[in-house]
Amino acid sequence: YIQQDAESGKYRLGLKLFERGNLAVHNLDIRTVVRKYLLDLSMKTGHTLHLVILDGKEGVYIDKIEGTSGTVLYSRIGRRAPIHSTAVGKVLVAFKAKEELEALLEDYSFNKQTMKTIDNKVGFLEELEKVKEQGYAIDEEENEPGICCIAIPIRNHTGQVIAAFSLSMPTPQLNKEQSDRIIPMMQQVGEKISIGLGYNPSDF
Image (tube, rainbow, N blue to C red):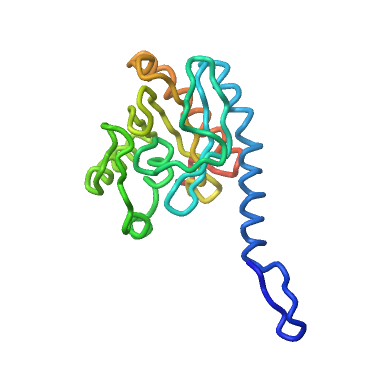
């Protein structure tokens, strides 16, 4: 992050800081593209929407639109989200190559966030297979008591999942009728966002 000039002994900013700065700018671009869709979904559903990226072995909330149906206490912009107990976390890692996923889960701590949290690697991998098959993830009070979330992947031009957005609601409101209405709506939005970032579904 900081480099020292061998001759003068003076310090200057290093390439690592430049790399991190570029990463931040890139993520701000994603936030700009996605925000209008989150606002629209929140208005249509009344629920809270989040935008999350992967940083290391955790997700990071980079945007949040508060809904009117109930307060989601856990999330806030800048806060980190465990990958094993959040819908967004599951989506961010479910589509990774086997080798990359194994490296990610090496020495990973499956901390119990609530009584419903998946707390072991075998159970988590089974859950990720389910996420891959259906194309979305759900956490049912696995990260915050009384709150359920549905998450959808956001892909770039290479088909890589670079972010995820989620919709959160009080548990009593997540019934089959709500799921059947909201999930297709979110999937359509996810595809629109991804296409806007250069993704072409017909290529994959």
